[in-house]
Structures are given as C-alpha cells and as structure tokens.
Length: 303
Image: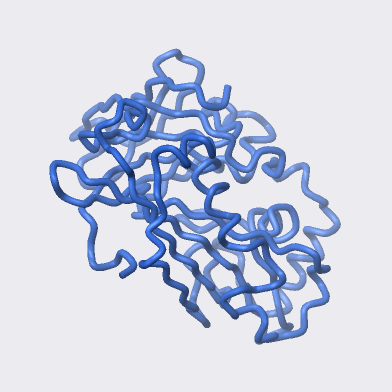
C-alpha cells in the first residue's frame, strides 16, 4: 500500500553502480549478471509512493496504431531511434507515453525542425544536518525496463500540458517558453504533487514540516539541447526551480526521509515491483525505484 515502509536490500559494486536489490519480505527482487566481486550489501528503508498512478501503463497497452504513426514521424524527421531503450536511453514507447499519456511534453515542428518541448519543475529540498545545509538527490534509479541509471537528480516533475490538442501546436510558438505558460499546469500547483508522488509526503505533512524559500526561486530555458534520454531528438527544457526548507530536521516525523542524520532511503513509485520485470507485459512505463541521498548544498543550487 502507498505510504507503507519496508526495508530494501541492494548490492552495490564499488565505482560501478548497483548489481541488484531485493525487499526483505521477499515480495520482489532484482538480479543482474554482474560478478559479485567488489560488492557490498546495504539495507535502507523504502517508502511506497503513489507515483503517477493510473497514468502508468505497460508498453503493450499503448495505442499501437498511434505508436506506429509516431515512429514514422520520428523517422521522417531523421531521428535515429535504433539505439533507444538501452544504455540509459529511453524507448520510443516511453516517449509516446510521455507525450500522449503523461502529457509531459509536446513534439513540435516537422522534418529537421522537429523538437521536443518539456516544462520541468525541480524541487530543492534543503535540511540542516550537523549544522550544514544539505540537499536531497536521487543518486540511482531502477527503471521499469530493467535499466539502472546513476545520476544526481533532485525531485522533479514534468508539468502536464492541458487544454490544448497536442497535434495542433504551431512550430516554435513563443508561448511555450514564457515563465507562466498557459498551456501547462501552473508550476505552483505542481510543487505539492511532486513531493507527494515522488517522495510519498502527504500535503498535510508538507504543510507542517516544510516551508518554501521564495527568495531563491529560479526560472530558466535551455533550448536546442541534445537529450540524453532520447538521443538525436532536439529538446527545449523550460525549468522552474523551487526550494523548500525543512523546519525542524530533529523531529521524529522526518525519519521517513532519512533525517536527522541524513541517511539514505528509497522510494518505489506506483506499481514498481522487481519481479514483474520478468512478466510478459513488464512493469508499467512511469514506475521506478529511487535511492535518495543527502549531499551538501553546492553551487548548483538556486540562489
């Protein structure tokens, strides 16, 4: 059930990421074919979160005709998708789901002008640990397709595109990149959703234990970026960065996110379950497991 806390045991290879993980109740497990040499097992608490809920779905349940037409559009634009879905890259099915189910991005233009536009909300969650400010990052993500990705990422959410038909956007419309875009949900509304979906923190909990630092809000646009997730697809990122501070890191209610000592913890989003990766349908797109860590605030944090 969502909000339930279990223990996660995972094996990490020194300098080479994770070799596997399992929950202590035996309900789910993951194993790679990597050697156990130079590995060590860790046990951390794991919180089950709602994730993206009913939006998450397996690739087999996507509209297959729509998916085929989507692939043809990318091929016509000269986007090589042959290596997508491995090496840390996401699949074509994932992009189709992201565009039409999650509504987390739009695809604009045609041919060489084809571009993915996504508006991101990044949450900097800051707590004082032993007298020093630390920020929360996901340092490792176990993905629905069996890939394990190591990257430092703050809690984030793709803002949903709403009230407009996704196929009717004019190419390069300047309204896409303005700070308060009328085509997506407002970033302020997304803050509470991000903390609840990604970290399992109910709104009532957030109100009691977190306070927004409005003075360090930042908005930026990164255009014509070569996406790591979708190699070869030109992308525009419109990014809202919001900072929340923990009021009292010593409070017992903060144990759920590894405080006051800054311990690592994990979250399993939605119906993520390692065993289901072996099922014919696999895990739903949009589910994943994160390992979270507290690190000293750096110059990358918004000022």
